[in-house]
Amino acid sequence: MKNVFWCAKCFNMSTRPRIEFDAQRVCNACRWAEEKKRFDWGARQKELTVLLDRYRRHDGRYDVLVPVSGGKDGSYVAYQLKHVHGMTPLCVTIRTPLEFQLSNENLHAFVNSGYDHIHISLDCEIMRQANRIGFIEHGRPLFGWTAAILAAVIRTSVLHDIAPIFYGEDGEVEYGGSTETRNTAAFSVDYIKRIYLSGEYKSTFDQLPQSRIRQWMFPTDEELARTGVFKTHWSYFEPWDSYRNYLAAKRHCGLKEHEESNLGTFTNFAQNDSAMYALHTYLMYLKFGFGRATQDSNIEIRRGALTREQAKPLVLLYDNQPPYQFMERYLAYFQMTQEEFDTTLDRHVNRELFEKRDGRWEPLYQVE
Ligand SMILES: [Zn+2]
Image 1 (tube, rainbow, N blue to C red):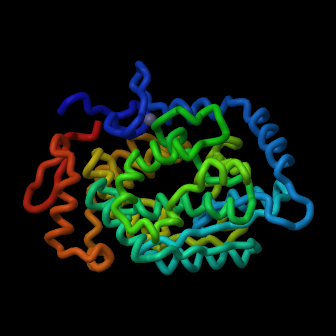
Image 2 (tube, helix red, strand yellow; image 1 turned 60 degrees about the horizontal axis):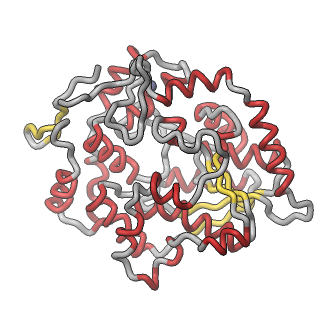
Image 3 (cartoon, rainbow, N blue to C red; image 1 turned 120 degrees about the vertical axis):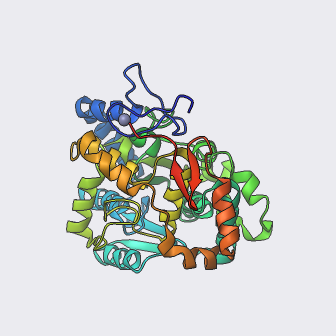
């Protein structure tokens, strides 16, 4: 196996797209986690105050748009904007495929804790087709939904003339990846297409009926300029801590977690929206060699809740968990036979990292 290695501090793998390691083999997410502790957050808080004052409306009109799911992060950001900074947020949710009952309950609890909210249910047939193409061609079964939480949310900002949009964390900076947006608050549509949609946006939506995909299309430069759309991440302004968000959302927004840990991991409070997420992370595992438990472990290690030694058995135990329990729902959603589904999965497996033994993909590497 060529040049596969792990971060000396967490379990980020060298296979992760866009990640960087330093000479000590520490990943850029761990370096950023250290830097966060001594970073001049005061300057960023000032930047936030200036920004919010520029957009604040005093006549009851919405002045900030917050994408939420009813989960911990969006709820935390909405709470901060409304109750700490005195803004008038409009919250927006794009309905996920294969949503859990708990996700709906959490969203209702969030709305009932005092937020104006719109729930957008997009053409479910187009959503299915976009996710299906994403699954088949890119190994990304939530591709259509990911495009929608970007494009349709930005369209909502234009429609309601609300310039700033606050997403939660900048995943590239927080979890290891591109550092392009580390020192700038705003990110562009071009960045979204290149990084979040891996350059696969156009080729995916070119295959769908053009008259039905308008909500997945980004507004034109002219439309963006007219509203002055400003897309940013809350994590730029304040040290991001998803566990703190979880506790705050529980306390203020009625958030509940799953009773048992989620499939493929040991946590029960993150990414609780959709049964599709387990397939998304299993494919991530087959493509790159790290799964949902690695992802969660890294966060826990960086915030000091687990040591690398404590996390290792969790990674070994949980990462390789195919989401069999949701199989009937996947097959019905993608309108596939089991054979077609298996062939699709197999096509995305990194054969340098895995081999099939007794019908199951097993790693050829040992996590170090
Ligand atoms: Zn690391």
